[in-house]
Image (cartoon, rainbow over all chains, first blue to last red; front, side, top):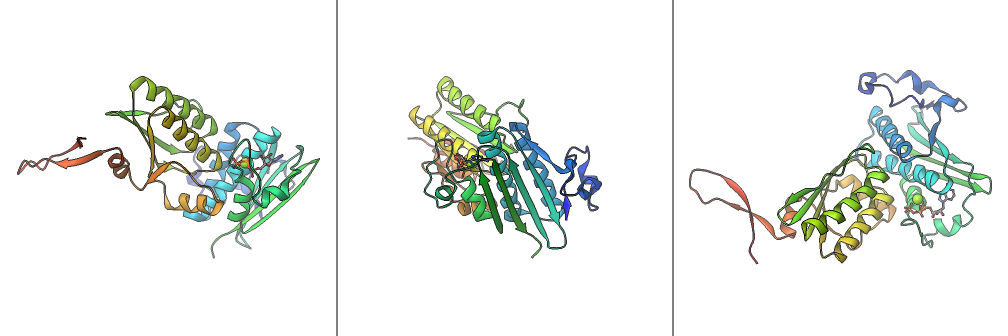
Length: 160
Length: 138
Ligand SMILES: Nc1ncnc2c1ncn2[C@@H]1O[C@H](COP(=O)(O)OP(=O)(O)OP(=O)(O)O)[C@@H](O)[C@H]1O
Ligand SMILES: [Mg+2]
């Protein structure tokens, strides 16, 4: 499994790296380099751009790419808006052929998660479709939340 | 679309054409609402055509912003029509259960124009083959 390096997408000519995997992608899960800090509006945009390029790299396009990019967008925004700061990681599992998205923060957690995922939640700040929407889009969706923070993992299969 | 980039609003008779493209940041989306509403008032527009054909992704926030824009524009007497939403984006919104309630959505910019009462008429000039956009009367 390749974790995408944070330098990914900042390279001046990303297209030239194709089809070889950029060296930055060979980072490991516990490698600080593969963390994308999420705080500002620009960080959300950057996260979307990076994951979009990563999809392109493995030939994920159209609806399959939209599902992944939209999920990243929703999770990144939730961190920026409700916590202020957190981080995301993107991984490419070329063996299992899946794209893995991890979003992590040390915020206050989501006490009413069950209500939200049941679709009974009326958001004051948005449409309230972010998390439930991501769960629908992903092939595998897992969320752990407590007073110490929130950890979301979403997986998308590709190439099948 | 970077933060510093300004909102594109093209006056089209008494309508505003607003093409969105690339990555639309939250800051840009918010700026869009302010700009369009100011232009509706200043230029006395009665229609807002938001073309989405160049947009990479639409997520829950951008959808809520578009709904907010349409709602506010309506209070100012202007109708909003969205055009050019790519199929994969429509499929994503559908899967997420996001509805753009209260906003007219059409396939193409041409459809959006005709929804505003603007249609194309072909010059009947035999050989010229010229085409022009004409405003339908009444
Ligand atoms: N990382 C997080 N930390 C703390 N609270 C969160 C986090 N993510 C979401 N929430 C809470 O869960 C609620 C539901 O989030 P969700 O993304 O589903 O909808 P929303 O953000 O309210 O609206 P939308 O995403 O549709 O614009 C939020 O209103 C917020 O209160
Ligand atoms: Mg949200």
